[in-house]
Length: 364
Image (cartoon, rainbow, N blue to C red; front, top):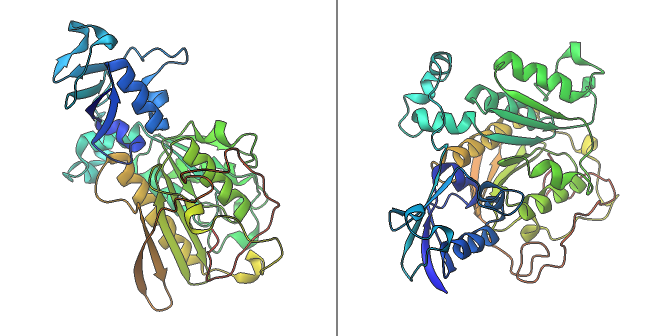
């Protein structure tokens, strides 16, 4: 089996932890692609049709030469060869005049440009929870031009939400949050496709929902959902931008497949009833804006392929003292989900509860 370098195009790097070049093995192009999809599960649906054939708009090159002029997928490879993947739709259509006007301040930034803006327009982001964190994240992603935003929430708007959940207002009291969220998003950017998942996220539907998106933002306010989203995002090969808040404190990090997950820090949730509820803990509304906006920023970086996402790092925000600290996260080889010998391989519906000690983790 030869070891080769696979060059990953920008639109697919969200599935390779933003790596532009990865190593894979095989005796021919077909075997290399299969090995690549095994290493990075998120790539599978991008490279293959449902029947297992390579998607017709994917072009492949070995050392700069199109395999269609060689032996196709049976083209042999040797150690050190370079395989290039070129999606036929790479770059997408040119921006319309309206899009150029709307996103002009993005386009003039060299880090984004028209190519990066097209990636945003063609991207799909799933937001778990239309609450405190999901609100600013959704609005800023919509304003940035993310083409499809999915919202998972089955709650209705209550007056106690309004001090922090800026997707909703007095006129929305009693409405499903996904409905008022969609209205708010469309007021900011009517071109965004909002997908409303007005249902609880469970072990039955989590994989089906999450696999449809490129990036997942976790703004959930309970630990059963937080663990479920973590596990399924890892299994589906989706980068997870995780945020949490309590009182004046916040945390943000990015869990990317191959670089650990939430269970590296907290392998199992604490027992129900062991700590005060979310409502008793309290949260400063402005904290939601700070953490949710950072989550939106991290998602944009992942989609466009710029900067250094918070992978392997956790940003800690202490608003009361206006302090920002960074912690280095360690991948636990004994993690029950992403470790060397995983013991959790199927989604779990934990008993509903809320809150853990402040020293352990925060809530969304």
